[in-house]
Length: 468
Image 1 (cartoon, rainbow, N blue to C red):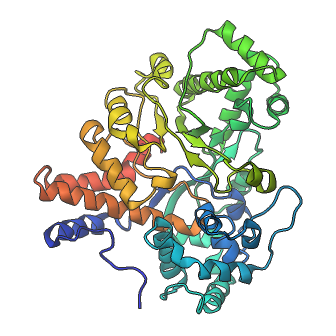
Image 2 (cartoon, rainbow, N blue to C red):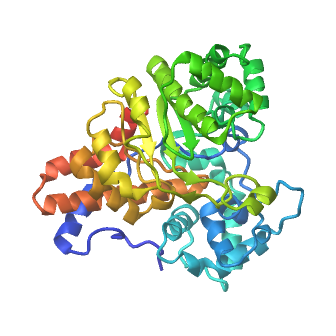
């Protein structure tokens, strides 16, 4: 028995399927480049065994536990940590049994495909997870996790990862990255500069965070100029550890290009706590443009992850904290929102700004036309809820004719679940080969061109977009 069909995600029509197979064979074993994600650098610094199957697959993965929560399973029963001092389950086997009992909920979802891929290719599990075999599969995976070949560094090498970027706060001292660098291990794990806590006036503890930014850099962050200088120093520090990108998670894609005197007044209002909601949004918007200007100076790629109403449930936020599955997409404008930034730096040929979206309606109407004309814009791949076969196909079909593929950034997995990385990249490679095979079958491109495009989509475009 096997969980994975060799022709999964390929076209049903035999002739087109044969083309997809040929294209996939040429790229399936290419090294994985993961330029944006949320794996913990601590894993690779300490190289300790993963504790158990539940804490590897279920507890850290909001794709998994949000589905079970939607069917009435409490987060506390799934071991999701609490920030309010309350108790949560520590019984790994019980958590796993709950997962197995509800595994049918994932039928037809990308999560099911990712987990099955990890089960079979990483742990040798070839039977579908059910309540009846939950303990047996738990024991099989748990036994493997005691083996040195299943420690984080060994899996990193086995997954053929050429580069993995983590996401790190602006105030992070990067101790784990330093440990990795000094260990002599050859794995390439680099940080990404994520300054939300010191750029978002509505982030808890914003003023104190800005003060800490000043202490870290020796700059006077009570002033606008000192605050910007502090960001430049932190960016340079991250670059010492290999960082090539910044990342910004904003509710909207709004940018501003205000004169310096207005920026100073706005900054003072924000750090003093007197800013209105619109002024706080204006500050975030101005800072995206400032980050883009800094990227022109230091060459770092700017990623904008816009359009998520984060922490939608106040109760979950209070009990479990941020990033616990209750983040919901909303409508997002890019044409007007990005215009101030693009007026400032959009024609810079050596700048790369990668917008991501959770609003698929803007692919063909806004994002593809924008990326199809501004040198600084490169489209990010389908993200989060649309990191799926159907999402990838919609993205290619709606952006390919206007922007082409060479104004896109290839693929990144954006995951917290380490063992899902090979699965996610495999789905992306299969989806791209499916799409390209239809172009060949329709005689829109030659097969030789399809091979070149498949290679570009696999890792050529991502190397260019992230200056690797």
